Length: 100
Length: 373
Image 1 (cartoon, rainbow over the protein chains, first blue to last red):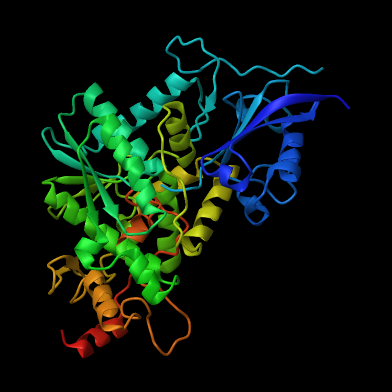
Image 2: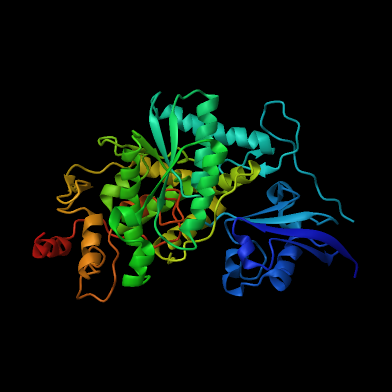
């Protein structure tokens, strides 16, 4: 299966749940944002006890209060979870829950 | 390969032809970064003007914790003061609770704001004001009720700090989400006195130091996107002592409502604004603390009561309702209700259990009498 390079970026506190703030990874070609959520759960999350701060139980959606961006555009302005990821994209997860 | 649909154009209506990047949580508007920022600032300006929050020449203390809300508040206040010539003397005010690895780091973020925004900064510490740091308090009482101490102490500390720098108004970073949560909590607790005032944009107008919440109508998501768009650095580690109880439930509930219907947050706030308490409902009367002169509905203010407990080893004082009852009930504290523990922008509302039950408490009163201060 062919893969494409993407950058997955975590901020606003989400970076504490994973190994590194920004990670360059290879994901399967033709992945959608929904596929990326599962990829994140299976490959990037290190703090499994607090994974519910980032993703819902079956990783079908992000936890409430997490904003997802593709190349800095809110995925709500694209095709939400059906948005197809392209080579070189930066996918960002921004937590809004920490601090005040 | 299926092509990704591009974002729609910016809808700001100002002739902008950039692609939209942000969907404003409050009203769903699809905007590019610069138009979103301007739109957000215009919202805050409107709240300030419509409610006549400030007077020209006033010195305004900005409660600054280094977190997202107060960082955005400081930046927006400075931007609007310059843009619309409010003529305000803005100053940053921070409270050092004495939590190693948490507050000392977040104060570095405030220090950065001081330099970048060119605003004077004053820091007051719990150690200086009360003789106890939060680390000392947790070492003494454990992690269970420490949010009560922190909330009560911070509220007073901000007031004292504002007086110290000669401010006539204090602004805090409470946002729409915080306010909707607080409203729900007050309903759930039957705290009528706070229910009536918790959605006011200004409180304490009868006193010497009114408190205002210019971000009252700003959604948390939009505050985060505003900080991101303007590359504002803020501190976002959770308080190491914060338990995740009462406010946590209210928060989750509000978030779930928001998902189904984003306006739910504004509707909750509007409900709070429209609530009025019947005349026959007994409300606590405001008195002056016999020890420190701070306002209180009891003989001693809550901070003095808590300090008395710490200094005499009676650490249930002002925290537990009854020694007989096994169930721990945290009593009311203004700050946690209106704000939250350390992670709040002079409030803000982390998940901390904060406060419960503001009603007058016969047992506390009795215990006070027994103590014979």
